[in-house]
Image (cartoon, rainbow, N blue to C red):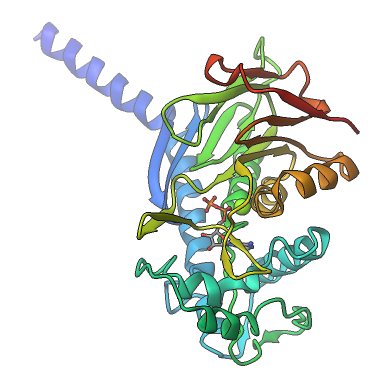
Length: 331
Ligand code: ADP
Ligand code: MG
């Protein structure tokens, strides 16, 4: 009898501890495996985080016909909510700031190549030229209650959504008293560091081949976003076509960068910039970074590592990449 009581007690304690300390949560949303590691969060808080992401996805997914973005893309006049409005305004500002390297109106092109639908193909030159006529519209105003896109114009927030989502989750966790957590939304990481922790976290930056690490960053309380085309691409006639496009050509970026990591306080900004700097290529990206010191970055090209000076002492290059020359971007 005593043994049964003891077992029951252990089982109850176990159930109780499960309800209290959830430790981590993995789920699939926005076409990505997402993991939240938050030792001090309980299950209810992680449920709230997960639901928040599904709500966001429901509003902005281009493949869910009911979403605000999909309805805009279908030509409807849509009463967009405040969150979608501010995300759109942010994305348009980032287009301006990056000289059009980031451009959410690229969607007709992205779709024609089969990204987001999964029906991959290489469109004919004439088709690309025709679709480019709908890209780069700077007249879209998000200030009125309802928004309607000009005929043929379509948008996609895929380049900023996960970074934004990481900000939302970091905010939600912090508001609920969590002061150490790792939010990992497939290449979009937000690290909430604890002052009580003796040392910052070390975040590994995956190599483009996915089988090793370029470097490790010792950070706390910031976003770390990596863009590259090694995860999402298709191959046709021996050519690899990645999912990041050059808005000036309507074709997948074919520049000199293999991977771009951006570190900063805002996940949305880091996400926008990791995509935009990847489009720019090392020369323009280096110049852009020299003129902006609110973010840090690590750019991997075929023959060098370009690293902003703010990462000195924070970055540790892995042995696999130690032979590449490092060019420091001084500000
Ligand atoms: P990931 O989704 O792997 O984190 P990115 O943040 O770099 O990658 O965003 C790439 C996505 O954004 C593409 O899948 C496409 O939908 C869209 N996109 C591609 N090129 C651009 C661009 N130049 N500007 C804005 N959006 C883009
Ligand atoms: Mg991005």
